[in-house]
Amino acid sequence: MLLSFHLTDNEPDHMSFFEKYGVVSVANLYTFFLIGWWKVNEKGEIVPYPTLKEQGITIKDRDHALCLLAEGELKGKLMWAPFYGASYKVDLVTKIAKQWKIDAGVIHLNRGCEGTAQHQMEVKNALAKLGLPVMTFEGNMADEREFDEARTARMIDLFVTETLGLKKVA
Image (cartoon, rainbow, N blue to C red):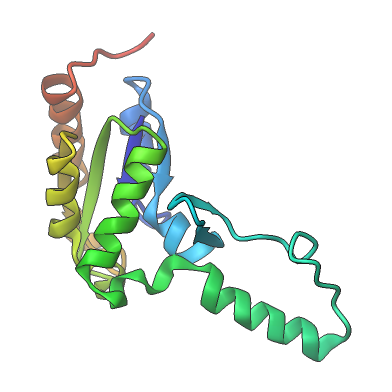
């Protein structure tokens, strides 16, 4: 299983490079930071942010609904993690890696989104300290001309075959 960082929709489909080897991405920081609503529970696990029903909340009116949505966006999204500093982001990534039992990591050194790309090398070092192999590749989600698809495909093939020791599946 793979923990992927910043594989984006507007660049070529990186996951198809991994699928040839039977590799599955179980987590992606875009999912955690920008899309999903998550929280760290009392056990230190990352869990889905509770639904309104689970919180015992009934929407009263439109204004109440908008307030709840704003609160969820601010509290339930971990997208603010890069701005809390490297240690916070590293802690989240370490929790994800351990909790979901990942085998390796892939980090996109993204020149097109400085906010979410902050602290990527600290994350790489933290995963390496856990004993996980990690590869990085460069690109720019805001300008696809700054992405070398052929080079990235070669890097992925080498990482998967040489570092992870996998072979292509039928």
